[in-house]
Image (cartoon, rainbow, N blue to C red; front, side, top):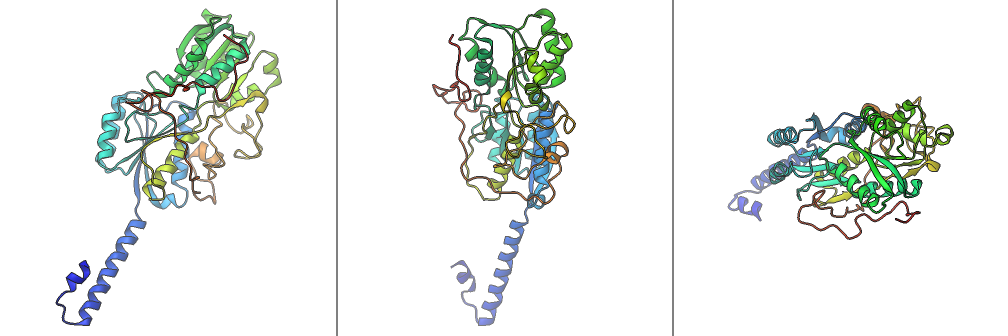
Length: 410
């Protein structure tokens, strides 16, 4: 109708044909321009001092170089450190620069909210991976509410028969991941009067720091019976070995060294038992792919909390990989292929089939790979007040055991 009004009063069919042709050409150019759009994406890291963070970042970089994202994405990496104000300033600069999307490991669940809201109001899509924020306009993609803390704590209690002195090796102070894990663990430990926490320390999800802090705790409490650890758990094994005494049950995360140790008969004879669970760097790649599907119009998704599944590998289920990805049920690599600190959960055959070791280690795309669509269904994460939502109530079963059953009663 608008075209007809423009044409009203035209004297000749030639003029009409000419204007129609011009309109058609302009529309075609606009469509071509839209399809060729490069999205300005920022990879906004905070804490970056361990293998987990490096691998998560490398996964995003590798995907950004994989067709067709290599023609659609202009990716910029920014590392702001553990100070929330520094990350706030980084976010503000990204908003000012016209970011289309920010994919980020947030250092705080609440301190960044006001800046995130300002960015959302200007059309920026904020996708958080692993750690979470409580600002409702952000997308949180995390395993944080999948039960690591409570399930690993119960596994340790089971190994100890409900009694013993334990260490808590935590992550980064003030971060939502560390808080949710520890809350879940203490929900279990507090039910067992026979379990006493002899030492609690922050290890910053790093093997070397964990080894140092565990060694200090062992100097004061050499008779420890078990260790509940977040990432960096292989450092706890090293600290016990350095002490020259027995090993003890340890529940930890996904480092290659820890998984190999769990399956090592010699280590088992020395007393090592436990389970490898915890945070997958693959959540960063999953968040990035969801972001791109939203930005490119392939997925209509309002901001929400999205749950990544919790890995769970007891010693009996450790299986060595022969190739460069998880195939045929394998879940750990030979020590000559990756360092002991390498975090094994970088792959997901369903969500991230594009990735191989070169992606996680070097940030390079897998030769010949192309981006594959995600499954249509996305799992919504439960509300967790102060972790991923503001005015919300936690479900009554928020600490329900999903991977292990209590074999000893309080």
